[in-house]
Length: 171
Image (cartoon, rainbow, N blue to C red):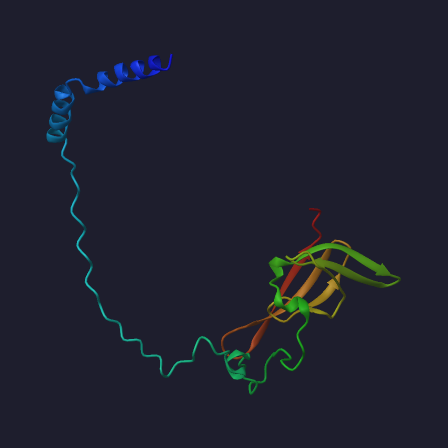
């Protein structure tokens, strides 16, 4: 009984020793017919040297000096000017189109607007308070609108008033 598996195994292995000439012929003809085409490399671009000369410029890794970041306004002219000594409020860092009126609060005669910023914070503002990038001051608050007076530079050192309003949104 032990001989039977050995005999069967030897018969199977003798089948692998047959003629392989047709297989070898097929491999050689296929290799001869199909030559791989590799496209040539693109020409390397010419290197142009750029001399970086920023010795006289401010380093981008150092914060700018205070006088470079302050508003420069000619106060020698006798015309409409914003109060630059006034400390700016939180809502003066937002443009008016980034603020939305979400409602009002009132107590007797006083009425305040509820304004929402783009980050989802809601602020209560009344008449005389400031908002917006252009020294905007709230002139009037009604249950439906907030009227704002902004100071816009005219380019000659003076400022002109621009009237804007913000309507209640129901989003």
